[in-house]
Amino acid sequence: MPGPQHEPPSDLVCSARACGGRAVHALRWNNPRLHTPDRRKTWLACEEHLESLSQHLDARGFLREVVPAERLGALAS
Ligand SMILES: [Zn+2]
Image (tube, rainbow, N blue to C red; front, side):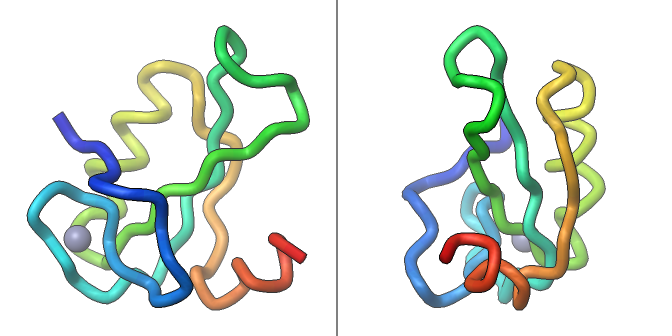
């Protein structure tokens, strides 16, 4: 099961287990059972893992948006 090994630091590393690839996509998601509606959790994905990570979130209805990882800094501030 995919999942972040750690909260993403400032360098952009794919959140897929044992990947460590450079993340180019950021998946913004929310679990309504755990998070308030405006809360966003972020997973990072390399090209290879974008599909599996987004499918994992989308299957649970958690996925809200996918944005370029380089835009994350602007979104977080
Ligand atoms: Zn990856």
